[in-house]
Length: 71
Ligand SMILES: [Zn+2]
Image: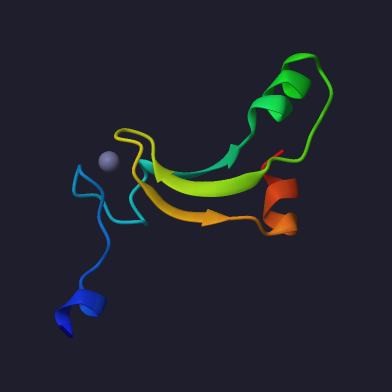
């Protein structure tokens, strides 16, 4: 039971959060994507920390400051 909290979180590739493949990126809803594509800057719906290779999401944040940085 205790080992669960001690074990580092890894994605399917076995990468930890600090691995270069694990990056922070903006996540948009469908409507926002349309706004971005038409050239209107929009703050992302949320920011995710995910593996760029397998798509495993380590963390999802809707913190406004982080969303602004991800623009
Ligand atoms: Zn991965």
